[in-house]
Amino acid sequence: MSLLSRGLWGLVAVGGLLWVAYIAVFYGGRALLGDWWAWNAILRNLHREGEVAANLGIGVHLAAGALITLIGPLQLLPSIRAAAPAIHRALGRIYVFAALAAGIGGSLFILLRGTLGGAPMSLGFGLYGALVTGAAILTLRYARRRDLQRHRRWAIRLFALGVGSLLYRVEYSLWALFTGMAGHDDETWRGGIDLVMDFFFYVPTLAVAELYLRLPPTDARPPWLRGGLVVALALGGLLGAVGLALATIAWWWPPVEAVLFAPS
Image (cartoon, rainbow, N blue to C red; front, side, top):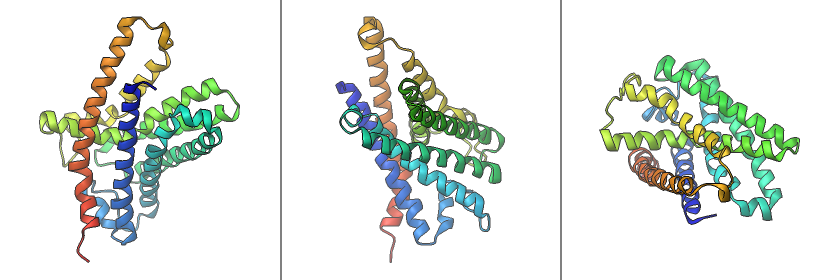
């Protein structure tokens, strides 16, 4: 891996760890304390009394989504694939089934309760869930057939989709930094930027994955393409690091702090 590749891998890995810590401490911690209503502190319709199936769906979605964010970077490491293929396969199975659980759990929640943003958000998030589920099924299918080329292609697509939950927060954080959340409606989640973000947290990433899959081998790329990719990846990594820091400070740390340092 090049220095840039290592840096981008480290960014995704650190982002995954921070996201998992947030999910585990805040949502998991509040659940262990029996304080289910606290789940609504940031997104107000995550928990409703008596709606067991929808509550279970979002709980599974959050837990499984955190798991795929954590495991995904490990699956990209050539060292694990080459030196410990059994570990790669075991983690891959967990990753795929977690992706299936996240996709199905989120889709169940949308069908039973809907989303804060109404039909546009439900459409965008529902399509995302369907894509995650489909990519997970095809990744597993081609792995079992020993069709490693197609397995790799679908695994890359699944990874690109799997970081969507993390990117959703990072992208909103960057938007807040540059515009002060212009176009966001905190009540309806149907402002201009909200309608864009219903799809933007996964469509561009999936498009980048498709572009990557169609690139010629590294040694066959012309200099202008190699240089352009380095600049684009470096800029994307810089923006991602800034957005991740902002998301941690503004979104994730305050509720985690409230759990960790709550008066006994």
